[in-house]
Picture 1 (cartoon, rainbow, N blue to C red):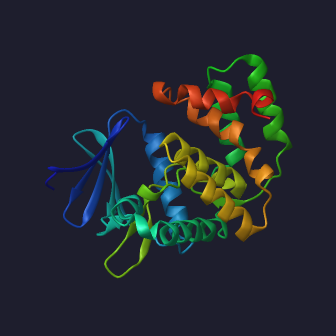
Picture 2 (picture 1 turned 90 degrees about the vertical axis):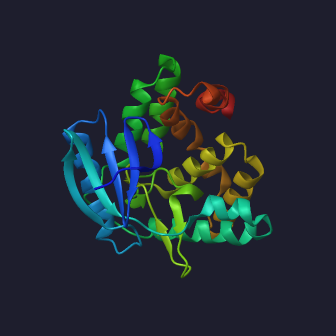
Picture 3 (picture 1 turned 180 degrees about the vertical axis):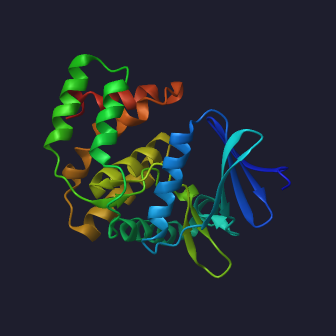
Length: 248
């Protein structure tokens, strides 16, 4: 195995391409964390969604490693930047893929509400804000739809044959689809693409018959979840959304 071509580096892991394989090597994650991610991916594979096949869970030089098939193609964010005149077309495809994910079920996945509750609890927000967020989360309807958890254009790969593959399922849960939509909306905004975020949200609400205000109720919750990453340049925007009273 030749690990010379680095695809990406993330906190506590490095991702390589080795021929027709993607190799994720974890620096600090425990066996439980890595095996949990492997199980999550296996559960997603069983739904029939187009995702890279997981080939092996192993160790390399004492570090936990997961190996997947490598999908040859370009990510949707690259295509959107390369062909801005096709932005609406790509956004429509992006949303269609996300809604196809929400149409699936995987009972073995972690519960979205449990994950959000834990994130709120460990955040650096004030006790008052945490209480407000916990109350809001508890009041939101319980669903069992698959939620990707990090659905953004860089996690959609389009092949030469125009097949779309969804990658990076480490944050997948089962829960309310509007939480997943709110998360994607937030990611667009954090990337400085507010106009695209609004267009995306309007498109979802029109196609799904969901009220915009209902999705927006999830924004303080997903913002609190994002805040635990402690990324300085995101702090101001996330603070605006995590203060439930101020947001409303």
